[in-house]
Length: 404
Image 1 (tube, rainbow, N blue to C red):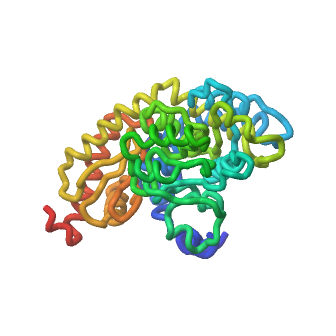
Image 2 (image 1 turned 45 degrees about the vertical axis):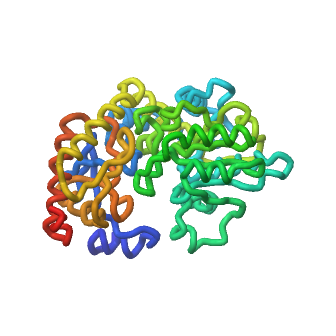
Image 3 (image 1 turned 180 degrees about the horizontal axis):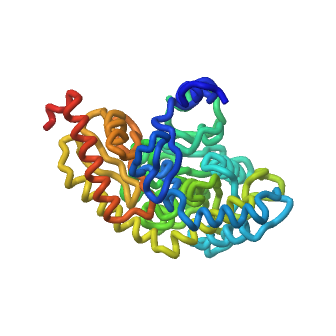
């Protein structure tokens, strides 16, 4: 083994596509993790909305252990019970009562790649050449998913990307002006997490559904960050009372095990034909068995309903801190963005870490919160204390002290 600190070893051998990690974590339990020096942290990021059951949950551990002791991988030349069961489960939870189907891959980016190919199949004799996505959207970092991503600074180093994709503002007016019979699909996130936890305008999904139906385009909803109960519904589109043509899923459905997927509704389920898409590891029995266990526990323990209640409680605790740095709270359920009066989110993130709290700077002026769905009053109170101390630290150490 190489000598030196973990930072030097990381810097020497890990690709520099990511920055230096904040800490080296060793273990977790529930909503807490510990680093290599024994310091404990309250985790209010959950691996970016992934660890729905927190860390080392007995249901997760048992599912991994039990399935790994039987069979972990078979390829898609063979069927296994966990994959079939998961397809039945996610289509039921999504409400696909009319012929819904599921495809499984390994990540959210792969799910959106599958969805983009699905959009290309909705081509109506070659007339549907346009795919729409939103300004500031984030759909992943593979080339197709990146083409859907409406963030120029992410796209520019890798252009030219896949053509035929346009980014429109998240407004009702832009929908009306952009959707016509030449559009194959519209991609939307119900809440734009990477943009700073930004909600769509009231009525946006309903109008998107109306217009895409009228013009024969697919409405594809990216539920990668908002799914698995995080917003207080199994999937965030359900708050709007609409039925999309497809959703993409990942993150929380595996509770920490890599898995992603595409769920289709109605006639859209018949667009893909044999041989048009696949994945060596996609839908393997280990990943699907774990996802079944995670989603089953979320359902059994009532964590979807709990996310709605605790989301309100978390918002109230943030507002009760009364910091002049905080100008508002966006989001829904347990996916919240704390809006800051100044571009000091990175400083707040570091101060929170020093106070034993893991949060995320989604952008310069937004702190993103996505805690495990298992949190309760004790964790909410502890969060308020540690986050309040972090805000006080930043106020004392920066020019924003004048706000106080």
